[in-house]
Length: 111
Image 1 (cartoon, rainbow, N blue to C red):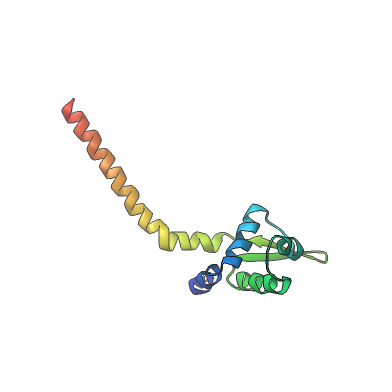
Image 2 (tube, rainbow, N blue to C red):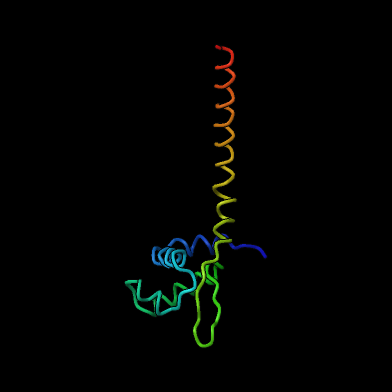
């Protein structure tokens, strides 16, 4: 399955959708009613935002009887981390490690 990074970034670009993801992070498996009670927008807007998050694979849903539960799917965010953050962080961590080793060598030479 190929991740559509454009869809993920579009989904994350809206503050209401980010708030929905934060709410699911804090308490995963919420109903639409529970999510609406924590949002300052209309129920129809919450539904629209959840659909966009589902289409971007950031939210997964399951049915428990007649109740639809919404769950945060952290995998696409992890893929973004690996693609856009992790590779830059690895270079910085390597540079810090190299600096630490050089300082230790210098300290040993002075001793």
